[in-house]
Image (cartoon, rainbow, N blue to C red):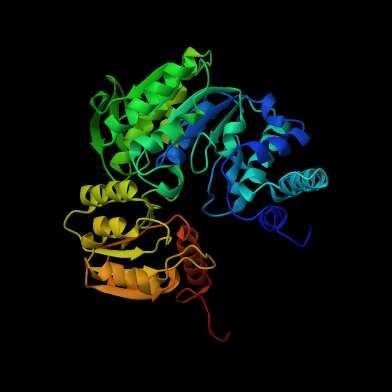
Amino acid sequence: MDRLKPLEKLTEIASPGSRPGLEAVGSLLSVLGDPQDCLKFVHCAGTNGKGSVMAFLEEILVQAGYHVGRFLSPSLFCFEEMFRFDKIMITEEEARVLIRKLEKACEILEEEGKTVPTLFELECAMAFLWFRNKKCDLVLLEAGMGGKDDATNIVSSAVLAVLTSISEDHKAWLGETPGQIAAVKAGIIKSDIPVVLDGTTKYREQVLGPVEAQCRKFGAVLHTVDPDSIRLVSRTIAAQSFLYKGRGPFTIRLAGPFQIKNAAVALEAVEALRSAGYMISGEAVDRGLADTVWSGRFEKVLEKPAVMIDGAHNPDAAEQLAASVREYFSGRDIYLIFGVFSDKEYDKIIRLTAPLAVRVYTVAARDNERALPSDKAAQAVSKVNPSVTDARTVKNALALALEAASDEDVILVCGSLSFLYEVKEFFKERENHDRSKPSPGNGGGDR
């Protein structure tokens, strides 16, 4: 165990692949003493926006004085970031202790002839164990891919369900239409709890019916965020201000028009939690929204040229990204670095993003079997933008784009969450290299 990193050890224990359904995770948690039953949850599902909405809520609730656990998936930069308590990630040593318990529980399941959990099921169980140990007042719980049969839906003590933007993704698992997908994601709705729905999307009418039906079935009260209730006050790349239902102005530092919608969902969730008895002051809300930081979502990582990273990995997210580029960078040359998983609707994503660019560099995420080969990505891009280079790796693409771009241009990295870590790694190495260079006149030669 000590020779392996926590993620490596969990992967070694887990059954391969993914598996919808609650039987295996339920058996595992039973062996562990059902730690989830000691906790209260805000359960969140959706196609896009889960991470941002939960980031806003996390900051607001911590500002309000609550001890807040947060489980998010997937991780972008390290395994430990999936597990947060009061905004602090789990330590590697804490993870090791919990994984030993999971390993013993899996041995018991094998002895009993029961199914060994998948990696995601183990991660969920690990989160519940840690949050119980931390005595969380509230846990912000993100569903993985779906809702009804997602491992996170084993929880029975949710105080609020949040449904963020719902659109087409994972269609082989969830359904062909937004309405079918919404019905699956609405499976997190429990009896007599409030439900918040992002109703600002173009699929509003398709999504609303299945969600309303699930709410009626369980006696849940639905609160829908309407686009007409949001009014923009000001917008720059550094900050945005808006009114929600005539209240505000509220200020956020996350860029992109879509983030105002996510902040409105968080505000509606705050109202639902207040109605459930949680004390959240207006000051905590204002400060929480303004202080929220969430990496990898239309985030600037370099000033000149502007380097933006975004995890847009489905058509709806790509459409939002394209709108953000037009909003902030109209008239500027865009150099696009693009890579995607082969099981995504990459032709649609390419049609939305590649025409924005003066040149596209295609890449493949390293050490990932799901990655679309960069040469195939280049072939797909060439159908809508002939100025394309198969750069193969993120590091090579960044080097090429930085050489080609002027200080007034924009380099946009998008298509998958999986290689955003590589972008951060590139600039960290570059910064360290620059720091190690002798400054002019510092006696760097012979003394």
